[in-house]
Structures are given as C-alpha cells and as structure tokens.
Image (cartoon, rainbow, N blue to C red):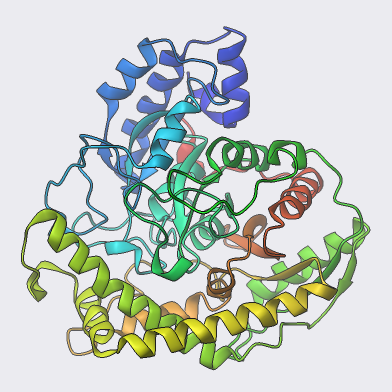
Length: 476
C-alpha cells in the first residue's frame, strides 16, 4: 500500500481508471501514512477519515482525479458540516452549511478529501505555528518551519501523505511553503479560480486559490478542473487550451531575466542566491535567453507600504466578518497578539487611505506590465534564506508586530505577484548542503499561466525532483 503513495495524483487516477486499484485502497493507504507520519509533522489537524472511506466506497464518477486522496487547507475552502477554523480559536467549532465553490469543483473532479491541514491564524504569517493547533514541522528537518500560510498542506505533500493538497496565496502562501518543503507550488493569475459563494474577491484581489503538488502535470490538470468564474463572478477569460496540454508542450525560446536582490535592497542568503544562479544557468542551457540583474522599475517602498496597509485593513475586515458569522464579540484575548495588533492598525486607516493604497498597487501593476513587454519570465528567490527554526517568527508581548517585520525579511520576493495579480510558481530545483529544500520563484506575464506551466514541465524533465523525499517517509 505504501508504494501507491509515491505516485503523483495523475498516476494514481490512471490506476483507478484502469481498475488496477480501487479508490478505497488509495484512501486507506493515505490514511495509514497520515496516522504513521502526521504525529511527527502536525500537518493534518482535522481528520475526515470516515467521510473519506464512505466516499471511496461509492461510485467515484469520471472526474480527472477520480478516487485520489486530497487534503484541504483549513482556510477559505469551506466543507459543509466539518469544523472550519482558519487557524483561530475565535471560530470555535464553527461548521459551514455548504461547500465553497472551489470545494464543490474539487469533489466533482473526483478527489476524496481526507482532512484539513494546519495554517497560521487567518493565514497572516509565512510560517505555520498557530496558537490553537501548535506548529507544523518541516518533514526535511523537524525543527524548521514548513513555511506558511499553506505549511500544513506543503508538509503533507512533501511527506507524500497525499500527492497534492489545497493551498491559497495572499502574499506568497503557496510559493513560500512549497519552497521550504521541496514541492511544486503554483499561484495562478488573480481571478483564475473561484472564491464564491461567500466572497467576490479577497483583500482587494491579493488572494488566489490553488494547490501544492508533487508534479507539474498534477498542478496543471487540477487548475483545468477548478478554474473559471462561478455564479456572479466576472469572466476573466478562459485559457486557449487546457493547462494539462501546456505542461506537455515545449516553451520555445523565452526571454528570462533574474535577480537575487530583494525589493528592500538586501541580497538573499548565499544558498538562495546560488539556487537562482543555478536555475538561470539551467534555463540558458535549455536554450532560453537569460539576462542577469534585472528587475521591474517599481517604487518598492511605496508599493510595500500599500500592501501592508491593505493586509491590515483586511485583517480588521476578517475579524468583523467572522464576528458577524459566529455571533461572538471580538476581544484581544481571543486572538494571537499579532492578529489583534494588525487589525488595530487596519482600523486606524481611513477609507480614503485604502483607496490611495489600491491606486499605488495598480500603478505597480502597470509598471510590471511594462517590464514584461521585454521579458517572458522573471526569476527570483522565493525566500531570502533557507527554512528558519520554528519559533523564529515569535513576537514578544511588548512588540507584537515583530513577526510581521521578520516575515518581510524572510519573504521579500513573493508579495509583488499578489499586488499585480501575475502567475508565479516555486520550483524545487535546489537543496542546501544540510538537505533543506530551496525553491526558486518564476513570475509570468499576467494571464499567461500557460508559459509558466510549459517552462515548469521542461525544468522538471531536466532536473527531476519527484523521487526526492524526506527520510521520515520511509516505512519502519
């Protein structure tokens, strides 16, 4: 049974389709791995095993991933009748009465949800250490962060508990944990996946839904299964052909620029810089035109301030929204100190200041678009240093926002793609001498997810990573 879990989701679905394996066998194998490995990781915080077994016993239909085990991040994606916390004690034992549209589409694709994964409170930090559930541990080094906010999902996929898991991204929350855990993390173009029925957009368009996966082809095919507007949403246009086809197509000769200098002027850690340089050399070897030391002409300081203002206003909105939904009065003791401090900051800003921030971010998007007249892809580090020890983001009582400043130091490269809405991905191309994964970020032109999938598949063929797994996954 353990051997099945080394396959990606596409391969598992093919076995089900050919009737070489039954969905219940895949589900039981994944549950057995979760029960064996999760106590070391704390990645899965809400098991749904009996529901999963019941689903696996029914006809699974003809969906692309029929019968394949899957995990949901416990943020945004609501599953009817199952506890939903967003990493916060404030939500108590709240359970929604209906699926979010994304969850409905995931189930229509045939995926069988085994449980919910850990996330920091409201997805604020690039680590996964919520007060309510405790830290998720990186499967490559149990004393290190798995990244965040999709750290539970990334750790679960890295440990091959499941071949892919739901994730979302408002400032790097797909790409950062993918980089820290050595899996593939793709943030689609803004608006590509649905946010309904509860939301229209989130945080002024910063937040995007998708997944972390073992393989590029899984990510592409999953996006085919979930993308497109839901009821009442604007239609941002559909891809010319399935993304799964793009993952098997040649990218042609791309114009690729790269940098190892963060927007704040700091250089990334040597191992992260070397990973970018190595990726640039690999792209050149594959025939692409590669240009060093190039970055968009964006006012990084002003745009960064606008981003933080928007996030703080969004934190205040999040608390007000949940207070309304659960019928509970917010107070500081019910939240982590950073969350409360951030929402207090958000309440000090006027509506006018919010719209000025939106204007600044829209201007940055226009400047980025000019850069992509001359480049097809931009390469940067994902994080500025290898996965840091757990506890590194802790904030003392007298300085509750220290974690936010440390987040800016750790992950200064990812947030701009949320501001501009562009597709971006973390590709697991390097590992440190200590055996820690070092992901590399590739940013694409807005709306051009296809080029990134084509390039990612080419990189995967040239530098395969699928067989590289942490030692704790080996059966004892």
